[in-house]
Amino acid sequence: MKVLEVRNITKVFPGTIAVDDVTATFESGKVNALVGKNGSGKSTLIKAINGSQPPTKGKIYLDGEPLELETPSEAFNKGIMTVYQEMSLVPGLTVAENILIGKYKMKGKLIDWKKTYAEAQEFLDSIGINISPKELVQNLSVWQCQMVEIAKAMSRNPKVILFDEPTSALAQHETELLFSLIRELKNKDVIIIYITHRLQELWEIADNCSVLRDGKLAGKIEMEGAKHSDLLELMFGDVKVKTRPEDLVVSDETALCVRNLTCEPDFRNISFELKRGEVLGIAGMLGSGRTELLKAIFGTGEFSSGEIEVDGKVYKKTNPVQMKAAGFGLTPEDRKLEGLVQIHSVSNNLTNASLKRIVKGIFIDKKAVVDSCMRQINDLDIQVTGLDVLVSSLSGGNQQKVVVGNWLNTVPHIMLFDEPSRGIDVNAKQQIFDIIWDLSRAGISSIVVSSELEELLEICHRILVMRLGEINEEVDPSDVELNQLYSVCMGVSES
Image 1 (cartoon, rainbow, N blue to C red):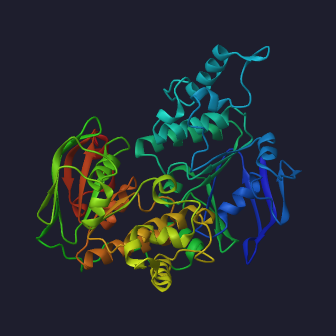
Image 2: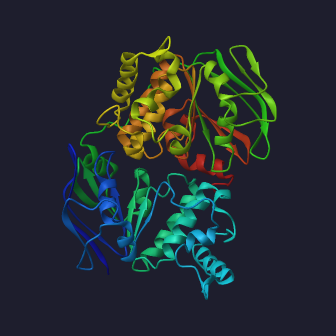
Image 3: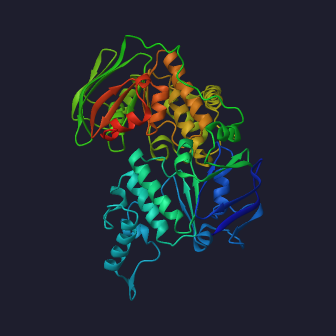
């Protein structure tokens, strides 16, 4: 059995102690989960282990040997690999080039491409993925990229693999494939550290769970026999998990009518109505056309036929400027590429969509900027040291909340939420659900796409199920169980 141990790890940043005297052990033959709400210090601890941010104090030991990890390459050379939530692949290279980068098979001074492709194929086969090693990464889906990341890590014969939110972009059947792979790794004497915000996964995949809170180790529990309340108490103290309030009244008035919307091969003949104040969910596996549909409605994507009607006005084509003027807002699936300007400040990112509201004549109303930003920072509990800090410096969860706050500042009539809770902890999810419900109370409609189907059951009045680009079924959240919804999405029978 191999053991990775962190002893008295402390990481100090200007004005804050991110990790405070943490001691923990992670063993091979087990899936060692690591959880904590945003700002708990878990990302910083992981970066200390993989060499991205050396600790201010403390030591890291692998099988009793002290490690001095000043850079990721040093951790890499010690057999410590990280599979990130935000993929680190090079889009313009092939699958094989990404998997074997830096250690291609050579023939003299030239790369032996035949052997390189063959070896990459072996690693892909070992995890049961049917992807051509010659395919460009930029042509792959999100979940295929995730699998290539894992194949890349396995090619290094790792001693430690850190999985950072590995299922955040995976549908249920893809998650099950990943879990099967992780269970195989348990038998290969690899130390597995599994970081996730999807707490329900822990009972399926984890053997134990270490919990960080406010930079300290709050405790460690064995998952067998553990209750959800045990874990939540370690993470937050007392947290009230909310359900959809009974005071949300859906109007008979139609806010949006979609008729026969088609964009082959992504989706076809999509028709539905959205009522004032309704929270409508769209469920489906990755590749079902959910995201493409939202983009087409908002105008960042296209549709070849069909129409959209809003407030009596019919749109045969859409664009973002036009639809924003019609009262739409969209929080995109990929926050880094589509939802944020990474080199801009938190302030800029919270007001990018609402410039007309903060510009007086030719000047920016600084008070309006501060008021708009602080409202969202307070409402969404965005952890930030100042409005001028770069949004890229925030954690993934806080970045996601900035994306949501940016569109809420436009005071929309219809909000399109594509994976609004991805990378966000339990407490922050509840805050975003509250925002969606508050919008409903104000007569503002929402369409919510989420890969976490239990969220749709919790927050929505109604759920449309998409499969292979078509709406196959409409379900009432109060009349369907989670396993039934998964079965409908996957097109399989429960029997």
